[in-house]
Length: 286
Ligand code: ADP
Ligand code: MG
Image 1: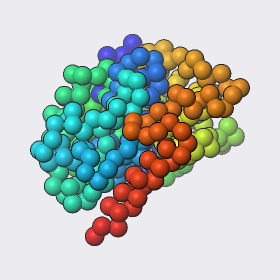
Image 2: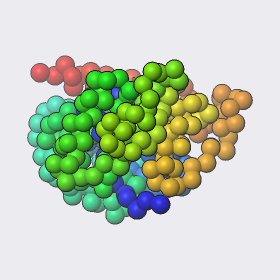
Image 3: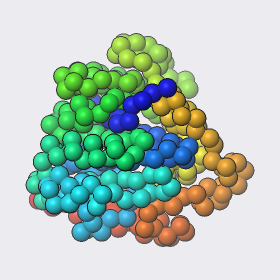
Image 4: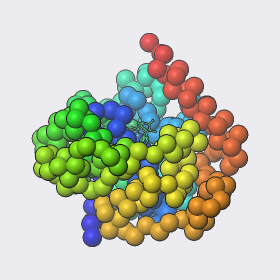
């Protein structure tokens, strides 16, 4: 269906589910056999780092944009067919980055992967606008909350101004009894509704497990919705994982492997804690 390769996952408001969408769209397509790269272009607030075991001197997109490393050096394998390019958690490095280098990095990834998803920071800073224009298409993410929908208009406007094009809207954290029609929200924004992702407690649990939702709880409502979204966006048929038969929760554990982390629960939590403390350190760094 679609020949687009590079997608920016963007929102006006923060905390609406961009990183969750990036990780799960990417993982669903990887499970379908597509080669996928997900890139944290939210340079100031590294999010994808939680899915990769980084040590303080690991190479990240910061090093690439500072001209100190190649994109390959900042690429980490997450699972079969999928790699992540995390942003650094070090604010000194962040200060030295030049977002312009992102164009070359994205073109390099485009030549190596079937799909590239750019997890874009919320807001209207330069580093936010740049990926909107670099991507072949922009996927807007919003919750149904009026404030989030309102801020989506800004992202549409920024996309237009940066010469990008909007693929459509994904509404996240939806409730079955919500009083606003999802179609109406998309109509009001004058963009196609690509899909809706229901509120699902597994979304948060999967972050703590350091495992994508579509692997962590493949039969859950949000995971099912993300696989459907992947098909809508790309035309690729995404199968339900073979061992995700839903009647044995421990089944999902065997498919959940995060690079560098042990596959048992303790190992994953340890890896996650390392990254969390790195992020906390970066945030408290003056
Ligand atoms: P963003 O990248 O836009 O800031 P995140 O993807 O980090 O947003 O999501 C923000 C919070 O919302 C996280 O705690 C995440 O686990 C939670 N979340 C995202 N999607 C869902 C969902 N479908 N159901 C419940 N919680 C969700
Ligand atoms: Mg995020």
